Length: 105
Image 1 (tube, rainbow, N blue to C red):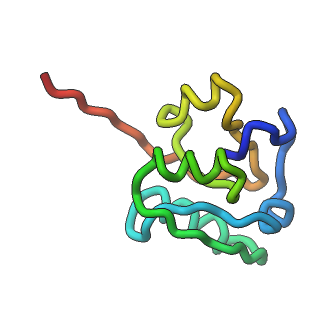
Image 2: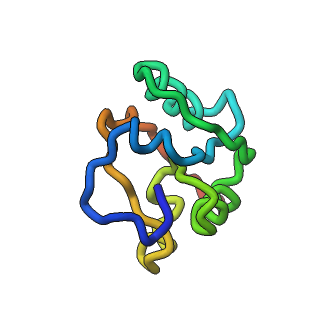
């Protein structure tokens, strides 16, 4: 996920992505594991900004231009629809992360 003014429909290589700080959740989460696996398979190094595990806070940091990040699109659907954030296709792509929401009445 990147700020809304990122180039649309472009596949971004990790070497290009590594030029930007990457907003990541706290370690020991599925998101951070996917991030670690993606970068471990690459020779590229990235600058990490650990932003806790709050997706809304991470989205705000990304939207303010502090970096790019890996968030499940359903969590930031409204920001994407408003043009504040934009999904990025990467090469290689990160592993799919199952995402479930539970709402109790």
